[in-house]
Image (cartoon, rainbow, N blue to C red; front, side):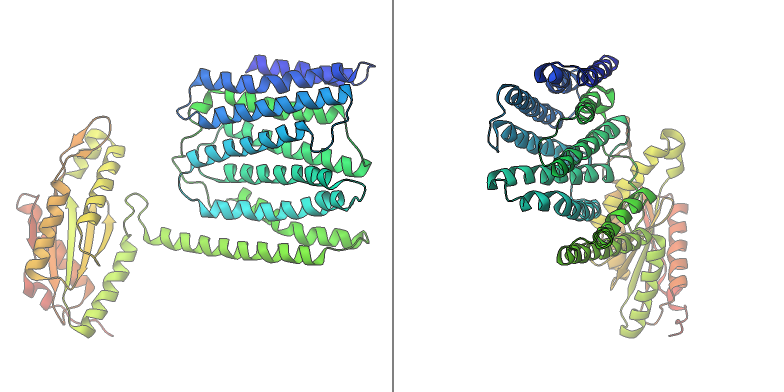
Amino acid sequence: MRLWLGILAFCVAARLYLETTDSSALVIALPYLVVSVATPAVIALGTIRHRPPHRAGWFTLAVAQLFYAAADVVTVLDDWISGEFLEPTPADLLYFTSYVLLAAAVLIFIRRRAPGWDLPTGVDALIVAVSAGLLTWIFLIEPLTADSELPLAAKLTQSAYPVLDLMLLVLAVRLVMGSGTRGPVLHLLLTSLTLMFAVDTAYAVQGVIDGGAVNEAYLDAVWMLSLALLGAAALHPGIRHFDQRSGSAVPDASPGRLAVLTVAVLMAPGVQMIQHLRGEDVSVPLVSAACAVMFLLVLGRMYGLVAAQRRAAVTDGLTGLHTRRYFTEALAVECRRAARSGHEIGLLIIDVDHFKRVNDTYGHPAGDRVLQEVANRLKAAARAGSVVARYGGEEFVVLAPHTGGDDLLALAERLRLAVSGLPVDAGDQALLGVTASVGAATAPAGAVDPDALMNAADEALYAAKAAGRNRSVAAPADRVEECPLPHM
């Protein structure tokens, strides 16, 4: 890493110095070419040396930079020999290929770090894309296409670069906003992609202003830094863990994320105001369309946030079952429904036997794995239409409408056997035999007080534990029949 950064510093200094001399164009460009040509080799070297578990993305990145280096060599030789290639030149075709491969590499990273569809992050990236796309069109693509002296092929070629840069920017936003481990490798990649977008944009803007080709030393220096950061990312040992998902979820509405989205949304009216103050033709249809699209995206994003908050409020974070709050509300609703229709309500309280020993002997992570596996088995064995929830600690509850008597006791036995059927993998090659005690209670028609039903099932659970655990006990039928009706 230090050697590579030292080479970068030397080449940047040499490029800036040669710009002040009377050297030939080939000599002046030589330090830049050293960094450009060395970058794919450095990426491949870092990948082979550190051996990340998934190497497809890194090797794709190396191939992308190989095409980029080839394009740089063709460009320099073309400028040095004649500069008579017509757009699109062979270098342009190589650059386009490198952009596509670079995008493919970033997509591979995204899919490895966040399997499945991360819709909220995708919407955030789309909001940024619409805003950046508006700026790109107004200040880059439209001036290029409005130049009547340029041939159509040249217009299309020059317009393709801002579009490709925009694509990379969106992918960079998607990468940093998605889930996955944070660290130096992510920061190096993000900085490289951001610098590449910034310097390409500066090059295009200066070309529009000057009306011709641009060859500035400071632009080459930033391009060199952007390329070198890709190599530095591959050389960092953190690439071994770069593809891993983060143990904690990325904040869905963090201050940084909200700040980025705020700037993106305000960009469209800001551009419109700047055009108006400068006395330029205001692109009202385009800006209005962009505002409408971003408004709809933000509206959809808000709906997703509210839905996620609702799910979090009723979903246990460890087991994925319903929470105690959700169960309590569901029990009250079912009791009112039973009072009207006269059907039975079955309730099971399930307690994992000797759970404290698991935590004390194997640690809390092992206890968490046991709870997760018990929850999965209960959910798989419960009847359709039942509500399965984690009531607290190692205690679970199952609400089974239209179930009572022998049917409820049979369901209790099925759940108990499902819990104790196979050992649970608690990690570190520890297989634990887990059992559970079950208390069952039935509320016949007319006896629909939620608290009384819970008390009856709890007493039955206590009886199961007192009898030796790992068994199911049903509360007497008259224990719940004595309960009063709730006020309707």
